[in-house]
Image (cartoon, rainbow, N blue to C red):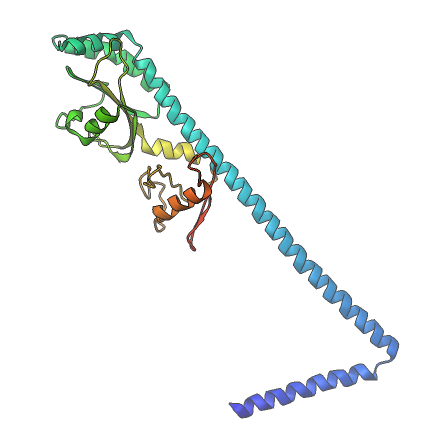
Length: 289
């Protein structure tokens, strides 16, 4: 092996020496011409290499900015849709049928329960028609549950027996529940649930509204503003928990570390304002915006 290396070095040295001898045999004018040709060739190569990298960096920067704007727009549409659904729920609480249910609940009079259930159907239908993304509605009261009768209610599950009831009874604020299988209606579709205390006049405690939103429809809403090649969609809450079901988008890639994503979000917003738009996270194999 050593002899082979020495032979190769000897041959290479002879070739280089031969090239220099050929160059020195040329006239001075020819050598000047060859020098300028080599200089121009090197300059063209260097200029082309620099131009390529500058253009590539610029394209990557523009593509990243476009992706950031798209993510910001999708997030804004997502938030506005959820806010619109929450506001639409207020129309339910302004209906005459809801007022009748409130009065009966305060009096603990369930004698006309089925009459009130029938009266509530038009109110439920209007809300479901206006917001097609809603899967189901459940109005929980002391005299019974009210819901769209075209969806079968699973009677074995009572909202009053859940930890969620204790939480909202204590805090008295609306709660968004991450993606889960629906426990209150047949089919057990995956939904995201808005739980809120009913606003009544006169005031009545222990009346709550559960609004189930179709998880797949929310994902479709996000994808409307994203290109098909944009990769997976990850929606996190303030605690770093996944809101949508992992893999719901059909992506079979390895799930991201949600703790790392939350840490990246907090680094982009150290003041905790949560209104800084996009943020970036790179785990080595995948990049998230």
